[in-house]
Length: 50
Image (cartoon, rainbow, N blue to C red):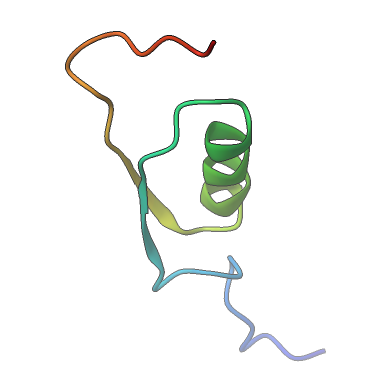
């Protein structure tokens, strides 16, 4: 077996998550589970999803 494989798929990826509806956080969580560093930026005021 090849033991030179990385433990995670995306160790060198840094992501800035600026979404606030369901798709953004879902993708950020998926990328984080694959090893990416996810930085979440949230608005100062509450954003209404109307």
